[in-house]
Length: 250
Image (cartoon, rainbow, N blue to C red; front, side, top):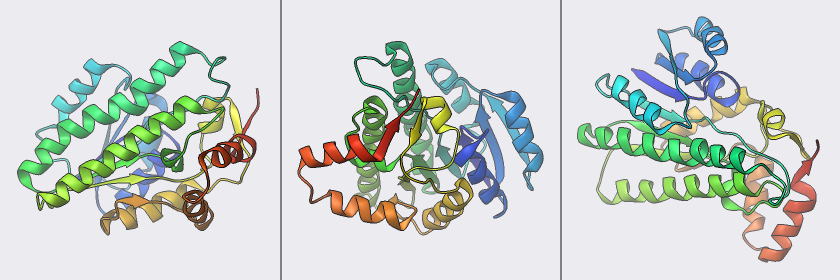
């Protein structure tokens, strides 16, 4: 059994690697930081290997698929991604375009390529690490929220396509709220609410993934927040998100 995880050098990706290894899966750790990936690999209790990949580069995504397409990958986890706090008119355009490449394009390409193989053999799991932001619009974190909306809704649509065709292949979206990872440092901001631990999120997620839950939302607080947000007018929801959910800092 093999699992391939992008963005596996830290945070949720690293913890998902440990969780799956504890269930007997060999792990392929994908990212661009060789030193950190090697550190994670040393702690994996099953067989593991690292693959260096710049996920914002389309060619490297195809190279990654070509490398592992014949190795009967059982689980694909698209986890790599980052955000960028700030007003839309003030955030760096090039950084945002890189975010779109990593948060959307990489997910889209790898999901499509591996999913075709999974469907042919009628087995396999794909987990797209999204965010509770995938159900909202996010002032002061606008591009990040938009990317997560794309992947969340894409994942849900594919899930229904698989259900309608009677496929045994699973695809689901992990949609947590704030998690204590390097997200804040990379995004140059701080959360205004306490984050969950990546260890808790990963263990919860793996359990729900194997139960084939389409939308996985760790934490009661975020579950309740998403539920009540359904009934809020758009303007009120935007105001709440702007003022309370995210807090920008330099």
